[in-house]
Image (cartoon, rainbow, N blue to C red; front, side, top):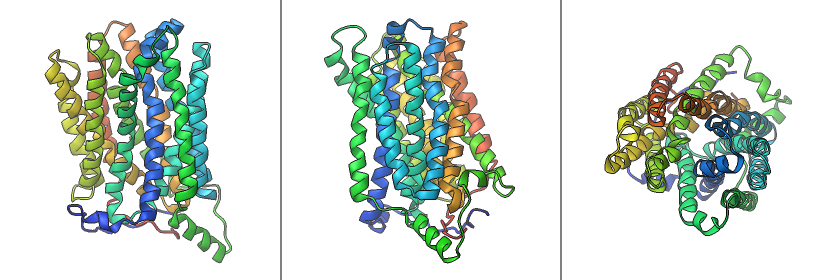
Length: 427
């Protein structure tokens, strides 16, 4: 079993590609995009609430960082579980279940009576978060034409930064309305996380099952065969190298992203500034950068070249991001790091899904992404520990961002180029 061969096609030009995408394909796209966006909102809102949570439970910064770490670590359970289910029973049902799951535990997080309870609920939230990506991305990408997959990938991944923008706006305009007494406002912010459950109605009524997955089921019936549990196939001799290398690459991407984002709001607050404008610039950069990286990945640079070019420029912008005090330069740094370093993620959904054959695509991409999330989940805790040992937050973030960016580039080039790879039901 191996991934489909690569056939190079002309990259899309101007906006002509819009005419190639039909309503069914857009519906699948929006199901995955909105699921990932709302998932990201429920996850990233916590970065604006760290000071309140610390005051409520009187914990160290190292322990505070574990809120993110435990969520990322448990995403691997959801990624593997939903990915395995999506390969066996279709992409739609695991996506809907995952949305309901993370919405429920986002809401319950606001009812925590202890820091230990909050950690447990955020861990359970992480299971649903992992499931949304593992089931949603193949659902969308298997609907879209191969030559537009990079474009779709960039827009899908931009959903994460879009969710971050929404959380910044909710914090800016909603938080003051409920900040009426201690230990209350952060709970309301978590409770809002139940709203994404409404997305399930859209998926049920508007979204069709993946045509690639359906074709594979017809092929299996015609040949009177049945796929083994897809998770076990990832460790067969012909796929184990792909499985391990993609997981390693995603570890470095996670290391990079949470070096950039998790402690950024406390960093800005520590300078006596309000974090919302900086977070908005960072994530506007992330949205536009992911779309640009997806489009760039369809050119001669391919997936690997696009990620490399974006990350190198992002590393160069780090001093403006965390090592200067001039507000204008800090705003510029926020946008540049968002556009280039965070934006380099635009190639990730297409690249991971192209690395695996249809029978294991959901669990393969989900496993790689979320094992990477689990291994990279210690990033916020490590940066918190560096602070507890005397290192300035800006220095700890800058060092981590630069190192992670170099490792992203190195691991991206350990795998093959996949631009133009076809999704086939019989591979």
